[in-house]
Image 1 (cartoon, rainbow, N blue to C red):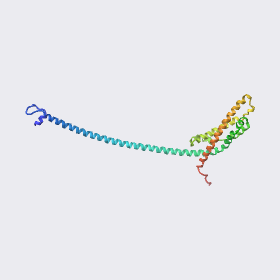
Image 2 (image 1 turned 90 degrees about the vertical axis):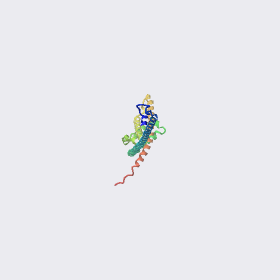
Image 3 (image 1 turned 30 degrees about the vertical axis):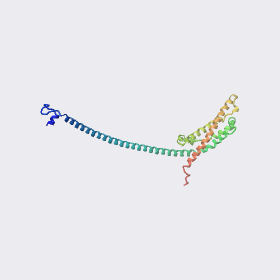
Image 4 (image 1 turned 60 degrees about the horizontal axis):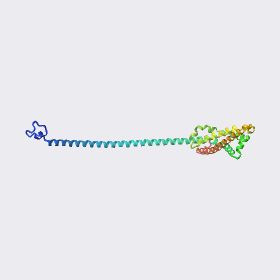
Length: 245
């Protein structure tokens, strides 16, 4: 057992060949180092493998999550598109109903508004408006008879109409009522009976009202013409008159 005595403590060094075997210790440490290195390589390999597998799993989970997110977003987009189409179709149906309901009334008020607008644009119309009580009374008698109950009843629905139709129809109501109020206020005025100190003031007031009535009538004429055509076009989409039973 000399080799064992060389690498293990001896009771009596130098006796019976008992010396420290440094080469043996070196080989042992080297072998141990190799084993440790091999173990480290094995651990590192398995760690790297686990990292790769984990990365692949995370990537696949991410891909699946992205796919699910894209599918959800696409479903939301489809639902929103379908809802928008339903709302658009509903608005179109409401527009047809409202325009068909007020179509005849628009056509009924157009002649009086158009005639008044034309007369306001004639030469000398401003002087007739200011000086002639007869003319003012004639215009007042005609325009004051205009009635728009159907249009007024649909005011809460006009915002549902396409384009600017709702705004135009609402403006028609405002302009027609403005003209009626102006003519009602000036119809009884007789400047020839006014005192000198008030006549010039009243005349300026009358000329201002003339311009307001003229502008309102021109705008109302154009709006009624446009809206009447749109209302007629909407009415034609309903279909023909049903055959009698």
